[in-house]
Image (cartoon, rainbow, N blue to C red; front, side, top):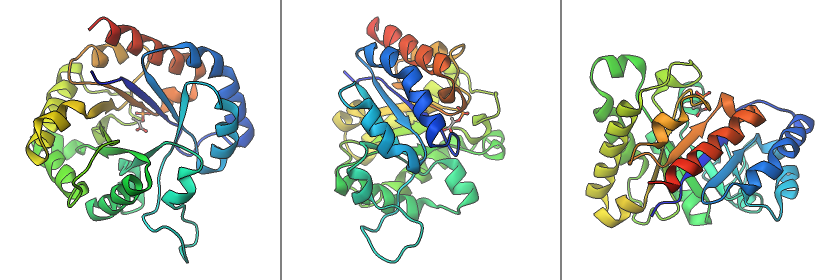
Length: 254
Ligand code: PEP
Protein backbone atom coordinates (compact mmCIF):
# COMPACT_ATOMS: atom_id res chain seq x y z
CA UNK A 1 0.00 0.00 0.00
CA UNK A 2 1.32 3.43 -0.98
CA UNK A 3 0.95 6.10 1.70
CA UNK A 4 -0.82 9.11 0.14
CA UNK A 5 1.16 12.32 -0.09
CA UNK A 6 0.10 15.95 -0.28
CA UNK A 7 2.89 18.48 -0.79
CA UNK A 8 2.38 22.23 -0.65
CA UNK A 9 4.61 24.23 -2.97
CA UNK A 10 4.60 27.77 -1.65
CA UNK A 11 6.74 28.97 -4.58
CA UNK A 12 8.23 32.46 -3.99
CA UNK A 13 5.56 33.49 -1.49
CA UNK A 14 5.54 34.32 2.24
CA UNK A 15 8.38 36.07 4.03
CA UNK A 16 9.72 34.55 7.24
CA UNK A 17 7.04 36.09 9.47
CA UNK A 18 4.21 35.13 7.13
CA UNK A 19 5.58 31.62 6.86
CA UNK A 20 5.67 31.25 10.64
CA UNK A 21 2.09 32.52 10.99
CA UNK A 22 0.85 30.18 8.24
CA UNK A 23 2.45 27.14 9.87
CA UNK A 24 1.18 28.14 13.32
CA UNK A 25 -2.33 28.37 11.84
CA UNK A 26 -2.19 24.92 10.23
CA UNK A 27 0.02 22.97 12.58
CA UNK A 28 -2.43 21.43 15.03
CA UNK A 29 -5.06 20.38 12.52
CA UNK A 30 -2.57 19.06 9.97
CA UNK A 31 -0.72 17.11 12.62
CA UNK A 32 -3.91 15.28 13.60
CA UNK A 33 -4.69 13.97 10.11
CA UNK A 34 -3.41 10.40 9.98
CA UNK A 35 -2.44 7.90 7.29
CA UNK A 36 -1.07 10.51 4.94
CA UNK A 37 2.25 12.31 4.41
CA UNK A 38 1.83 16.08 4.43
CA UNK A 39 4.80 18.10 3.28
CA UNK A 40 5.28 21.87 3.38
CA UNK A 41 7.72 23.32 0.83
CA UNK A 42 8.37 26.95 1.79
CA UNK A 43 11.15 29.14 0.36
CA UNK A 44 14.67 28.22 1.55
CA UNK A 45 14.87 31.13 3.98
CA UNK A 46 12.01 29.76 6.10
CA UNK A 47 13.11 26.12 6.29
CA UNK A 48 15.05 26.37 9.55
CA UNK A 49 12.30 28.21 11.40
CA UNK A 50 9.59 25.86 10.16
CA UNK A 51 11.68 22.82 10.99
CA UNK A 52 11.69 24.03 14.60
CA UNK A 53 7.96 24.85 14.55
CA UNK A 54 6.93 21.38 13.35
CA UNK A 55 9.34 19.43 15.52
CA UNK A 56 7.51 16.56 17.20
CA UNK A 57 4.58 16.73 14.77
CA UNK A 58 3.74 14.49 11.82
CA UNK A 59 4.20 17.37 9.35
CA UNK A 60 7.17 17.06 7.02
CA UNK A 61 9.30 19.64 5.31
CA UNK A 62 10.59 19.98 1.77
CA UNK A 63 12.58 22.43 -0.33
CA UNK A 64 11.57 23.69 -3.78
CA UNK A 65 14.93 23.20 -5.47
CA UNK A 66 18.49 22.04 -4.88
CA UNK A 67 21.85 22.25 -6.62
CA UNK A 68 23.69 19.06 -7.55
CA UNK A 69 27.16 19.86 -6.17
CA UNK A 70 27.93 19.20 -2.52
CA UNK A 71 29.80 22.47 -1.83
CA UNK A 72 32.03 25.08 -3.42
CA UNK A 73 32.04 28.23 -5.51
CA UNK A 74 28.43 28.22 -6.70
CA UNK A 75 27.17 31.60 -5.54
CA UNK A 76 23.53 31.59 -4.57
CA UNK A 77 23.04 27.83 -4.71
CA UNK A 78 21.99 25.43 -1.94
CA UNK A 79 23.45 21.93 -1.76
CA UNK A 80 21.76 18.64 -0.93
CA UNK A 81 23.98 18.33 2.15
CA UNK A 82 22.72 21.67 3.45
CA UNK A 83 19.13 20.63 2.87
CA UNK A 84 19.57 17.24 4.49
CA UNK A 85 20.03 19.02 7.84
CA UNK A 86 16.76 20.85 7.42
CA UNK A 87 14.23 18.83 5.48
CA UNK A 88 13.27 15.42 4.10
CA UNK A 89 11.83 16.20 0.65
CA UNK A 90 12.85 18.33 -2.32
CA UNK A 91 10.89 19.31 -5.43
CA UNK A 92 13.04 18.88 -8.55
CA UNK A 93 12.33 19.85 -12.15
CA UNK A 94 9.26 21.98 -11.52
CA UNK A 95 8.04 23.47 -14.81
CA UNK A 96 8.72 26.99 -13.52
CA UNK A 97 12.40 26.01 -13.05
CA UNK A 98 12.41 24.53 -16.53
CA UNK A 99 10.75 27.62 -18.02
CA UNK A 100 12.48 30.51 -16.20
CA UNK A 101 15.81 28.95 -15.22
CA UNK A 102 16.50 26.77 -18.25
CA UNK A 103 16.55 23.50 -16.36
CA UNK A 104 16.58 20.58 -18.73
CA UNK A 105 16.40 16.84 -18.15
CA UNK A 106 20.19 16.58 -17.87
CA UNK A 107 20.28 19.09 -15.00
CA UNK A 108 17.22 17.51 -13.41
CA UNK A 109 18.96 14.13 -13.65
CA UNK A 110 22.03 15.44 -11.80
CA UNK A 111 19.82 16.98 -9.13
CA UNK A 112 17.81 13.79 -8.61
CA UNK A 113 21.02 11.76 -8.37
CA UNK A 114 22.56 14.17 -5.85
CA UNK A 115 19.39 14.31 -3.77
CA UNK A 116 18.97 10.53 -3.60
CA UNK A 117 22.65 10.07 -2.79
CA UNK A 118 22.21 12.46 0.15
CA UNK A 119 19.11 10.72 1.46
CA UNK A 120 16.64 13.43 0.39
CA UNK A 121 13.30 12.35 -1.10
CA UNK A 122 12.89 14.03 -4.47
CA UNK A 123 9.52 14.92 -5.95
CA UNK A 124 10.28 14.82 -9.67
CA UNK A 125 7.94 17.02 -11.73
CA UNK A 126 7.05 16.09 -15.30
CA UNK A 127 4.33 17.35 -17.61
CA UNK A 128 3.53 18.65 -21.05
CA UNK A 129 2.93 22.20 -22.27
CA UNK A 130 -0.40 23.25 -23.77
CA UNK A 131 0.79 23.00 -27.38
CA UNK A 132 2.23 19.56 -26.71
CA UNK A 133 -1.04 18.48 -25.17
CA UNK A 134 -3.01 19.80 -28.12
CA UNK A 135 -0.67 18.01 -30.51
CA UNK A 136 -1.35 14.72 -28.70
CA UNK A 137 2.24 14.52 -27.43
CA UNK A 138 1.61 14.13 -23.71
CA UNK A 139 2.95 10.58 -23.44
CA UNK A 140 5.94 11.33 -25.65
CA UNK A 141 6.91 14.34 -23.51
CA UNK A 142 6.42 12.53 -20.23
CA UNK A 143 8.43 9.45 -21.27
CA UNK A 144 11.29 11.65 -22.53
CA UNK A 145 11.34 13.58 -19.25
CA UNK A 146 11.25 10.39 -17.18
CA UNK A 147 14.02 8.67 -19.13
CA UNK A 148 16.19 11.80 -19.13
CA UNK A 149 15.63 12.63 -15.47
CA UNK A 150 16.26 9.09 -14.27
CA UNK A 151 19.11 8.14 -16.63
CA UNK A 152 21.75 6.07 -14.87
CA UNK A 153 19.82 5.95 -11.58
CA UNK A 154 19.38 2.35 -10.50
CA UNK A 155 17.80 2.88 -7.09
CA UNK A 156 14.79 5.22 -6.96
CA UNK A 157 13.72 4.36 -3.45
CA UNK A 158 12.50 7.59 -1.83
CA UNK A 159 11.48 9.18 -5.13
CA UNK A 160 7.98 10.42 -5.90
CA UNK A 161 6.80 11.76 -9.26
CA UNK A 162 4.37 14.64 -9.78
CA UNK A 163 2.52 14.75 -13.07
CA UNK A 164 1.92 18.45 -13.62
CA UNK A 165 0.55 19.47 -17.01
CA UNK A 166 2.05 22.92 -17.51
CA UNK A 167 -1.24 24.32 -18.82
CA UNK A 168 -2.92 23.44 -15.52
CA UNK A 169 -0.40 25.09 -13.19
CA UNK A 170 -1.65 28.31 -11.65
CA UNK A 171 -4.32 28.69 -14.33
CA UNK A 172 -7.39 27.48 -12.45
CA UNK A 173 -7.88 25.04 -15.33
CA UNK A 174 -7.15 21.65 -13.79
CA UNK A 175 -6.97 18.44 -15.81
CA UNK A 176 -9.88 16.06 -15.33
CA UNK A 177 -9.49 13.10 -13.00
CA UNK A 178 -9.66 10.78 -16.02
CA UNK A 179 -6.92 12.64 -17.91
CA UNK A 180 -4.64 12.70 -14.88
CA UNK A 181 -5.30 9.05 -14.02
CA UNK A 182 -4.56 7.96 -17.57
CA UNK A 183 -1.22 9.79 -17.75
CA UNK A 184 -0.24 8.72 -14.25
CA UNK A 185 -1.05 5.10 -15.15
CA UNK A 186 1.20 5.56 -18.18
CA UNK A 187 3.97 6.94 -15.95
CA UNK A 188 3.65 3.88 -13.70
CA UNK A 189 3.87 1.52 -16.68
CA UNK A 190 6.93 3.41 -17.91
CA UNK A 191 8.59 3.04 -14.51
CA UNK A 192 7.75 -0.66 -14.59
CA UNK A 193 9.57 -0.97 -17.92
CA UNK A 194 12.54 1.15 -16.79
CA UNK A 195 12.81 -0.65 -13.42
CA UNK A 196 10.35 -3.40 -12.54
CA UNK A 197 6.72 -3.96 -11.63
CA UNK A 198 7.34 -3.96 -7.87
CA UNK A 199 9.20 -0.65 -7.99
CA UNK A 200 6.45 0.92 -10.09
CA UNK A 201 3.79 -0.27 -7.66
CA UNK A 202 5.69 1.26 -4.74
CA UNK A 203 6.24 4.61 -6.46
CA UNK A 204 4.00 7.46 -5.34
CA UNK A 205 2.74 9.52 -8.27
CA UNK A 206 0.92 12.78 -7.60
CA UNK A 207 -1.20 15.05 -9.73
CA UNK A 208 -0.46 18.79 -9.72
CA UNK A 209 -2.18 21.70 -11.44
CA UNK A 210 -4.86 23.97 -9.91
CA UNK A 211 -5.80 21.50 -7.17
CA UNK A 212 -8.19 22.96 -4.60
CA UNK A 213 -10.40 21.62 -1.82
CA UNK A 214 -13.24 21.65 -4.36
CA UNK A 215 -11.62 19.39 -6.95
CA UNK A 216 -9.11 17.26 -5.04
CA UNK A 217 -11.59 14.38 -4.58
CA UNK A 218 -11.82 13.91 -8.34
CA UNK A 219 -8.09 13.14 -8.44
CA UNK A 220 -7.44 11.17 -5.30
CA UNK A 221 -10.48 8.93 -5.89
CA UNK A 222 -8.52 7.50 -8.82
CA UNK A 223 -6.52 4.37 -8.15
CA UNK A 224 -3.31 5.53 -9.84
CA UNK A 225 -3.19 8.96 -8.15
CA UNK A 226 -1.48 8.91 -4.76
CA UNK A 227 -1.95 12.54 -3.82
CA UNK A 228 -1.25 16.04 -5.04
CA UNK A 229 1.37 18.71 -5.42
CA UNK A 230 -0.51 21.87 -4.51
CA UNK A 231 0.62 25.40 -5.36
CA UNK A 232 -1.75 28.33 -4.78
CA UNK A 233 -4.13 26.49 -2.45
CA UNK A 234 -1.28 25.48 -0.14
CA UNK A 235 -0.94 29.12 0.95
CA UNK A 236 -4.46 29.12 2.39
CA UNK A 237 -4.55 27.23 5.67
CA UNK A 238 -8.19 26.13 5.45
CA UNK A 239 -7.83 24.98 1.82
CA UNK A 240 -4.66 23.01 2.46
CA UNK A 241 -6.06 21.35 5.58
CA UNK A 242 -9.21 20.35 3.65
CA UNK A 243 -7.15 18.94 0.77
CA UNK A 244 -5.14 16.81 3.18
CA UNK A 245 -8.20 15.74 5.18
CA UNK A 246 -10.24 14.78 2.12
CA UNK A 247 -7.36 12.84 0.60
CA UNK A 248 -6.71 10.90 3.79
CA UNK A 249 -10.41 10.04 4.10
CA UNK A 250 -10.82 8.94 0.49
CA UNK A 251 -7.67 6.84 0.43
CA UNK A 252 -8.67 5.05 3.63
CA UNK A 253 -11.87 3.82 2.04
CA UNK A 254 -10.09 2.39 -1.04
C1 PEP B 1 2.60 23.84 -8.49
O1 PEP B 1 3.16 24.87 -8.15
O2 PEP B 1 3.23 22.78 -8.57
C2 PEP B 1 1.17 23.89 -8.79
C3 PEP B 1 0.57 22.79 -9.16
O3 PEP B 1 0.55 25.11 -8.66
P1 PEP B 1 -1.05 25.38 -8.62
O4 PEP B 1 -1.62 24.37 -7.65
O5 PEP B 1 -1.17 26.77 -8.15
O6 PEP B 1 -1.57 25.15 -10.00
